[in-house]
Image (tube, rainbow, N blue to C red; front, top):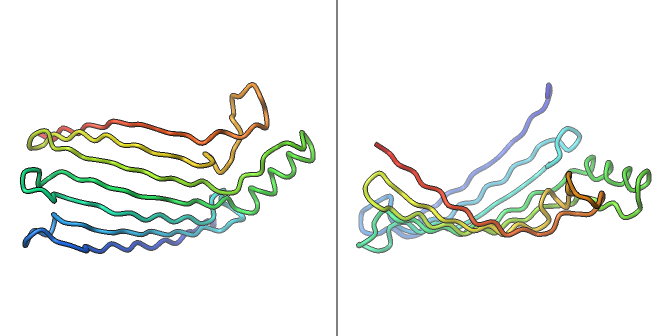
Amino acid sequence: MRGDVGVYSVFEQKLYRVGADDDRGIGVFARASYSPPDRNIIDYCADTGLEFVGLSDGRPKDKFGLAMAYAHVSPRARALDFDFRRLLTPDWPPRSFEGLVTAVYQYELRAGWTLQPNFRFIVRPGGGATGPLSAFPGKALKNAEVFGLRTVLKF
């Protein structure tokens, strides 16, 4: 959209190093962003987490991470939901925020090949949005548990 802008910041810090290896150790990160609420569904969001890399000498490339995130639904988007409430049904749920907790483990099967299972728990998917294909219009989506599996092969 013309005239739309956004700002963000990122903070990363290694808290502990394994030996002299800059890649291995424990790190923390935090990110935050803001976009004008009159042009964006999400006006601000933030996330933070911990990453554990190669803490075992036997598994120097393995990674484990925990993170959580928060996304705020803008007042303009909420106002639209209240309009739906007035026009369609008083039970229409207003969106407010989406929360996320995630855990991931990246296992190196062999050099250049990783397997990465992950789990995410999503609170108020879509900020409390309704199911677009639901047989019950105006009913908010339920919290969700998502299991994923990713593999990467580099050659």
